[in-house]
Length: 67
Image (cartoon, rainbow, N blue to C red; front, side, top):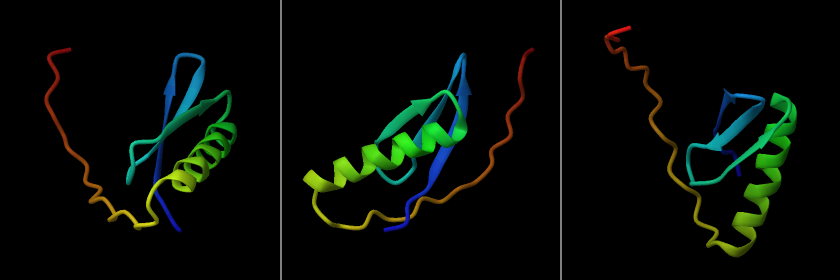
């Protein structure tokens, strides 16, 4: 199964979030965050139905900021 992850920096850690299902993890490095997410997803799908989630539509959005 191929899924999509978004990784962001949050204070002292990196947060990896799966875009197809509501599963996230974190780590001190991007690689560690992704490895932890992979493990969390494997555990999630161990107990969840085997339906492959639909791929999300990824689109940039620009907004005006008051800052």
